[in-house]
Length: 215
Image 1 (cartoon, rainbow, N blue to C red):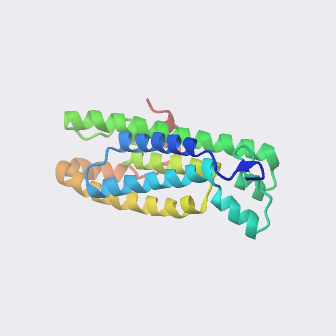
Image 2: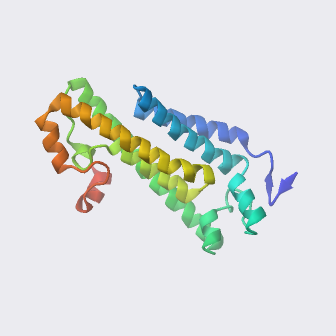
Image 3: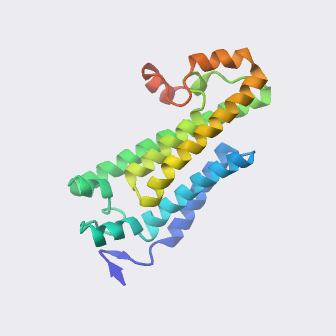
């Protein structure tokens, strides 16, 4: 049985592959240790599974919108884009939406990997990392997660991911507070001075481009 061009069975093999790749990236570059870190990484994993289950499997959110709000959204990945439909932009809007979402996601992934490399090197040397991305924000890896998830919401928003997004942001905000207390105990005035000069998640406006391009 098919509805608007998409088999109701969906592409579940692709769902599994994308979920596994996303899970590997999350646990590879966040490297959770405490139970709170594992919990937060699990929330991000749930976000990815919910995203890909609807993107390539069964589009539950689109099903409800087409069934109960009488919106004409094709049930195929290349054309079934919510934002372009709501804004009346058609196929051209879908392409723009997809490319914009992918670009934002890649920026987030780039920052996540760069931040991991810096903090990994610093932990081996037992020093406080304040260079690279860390000169612009105190928790660039968490900012990277927020950016990557925003890119995915631009590309393919769903009800579960829209619900999970603020929960994940709050969870990492709480984790950041906890980590800052640990850093204060470990580095004292050096970290306190660093906190006064460097924002937690969002770089100062004049440093936005530098935070993305920093080598």
